[in-house]
Length: 81
Image 1 (cartoon, rainbow, N blue to C red):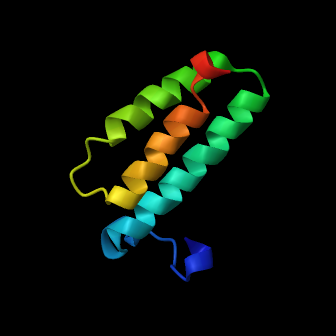
Image 2 (cartoon, rainbow, N blue to C red):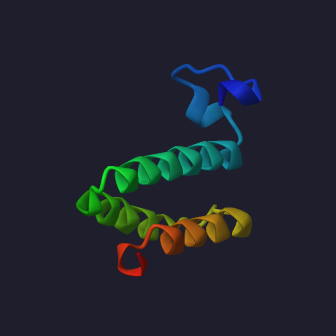
Image 3 (cartoon, rainbow, N blue to C red):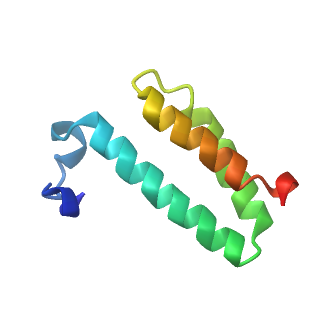
């Protein structure tokens, strides 16, 4: 968010565009999944993928971000790799 020019404070979530918050959260989750996957922590990956699945039901989520989430679900699915 800082790279996008936003100040981080207690009002950041309510004063920032929702799409920016979702994008930042998704990027952080992608890094988290990558790290856990590299460490071989399959249980953590599965747990976070379940969380990610629930985010797909968020009514304010753009179709672009929904597609990125689906991509993460496919990429990090432990059954596929």
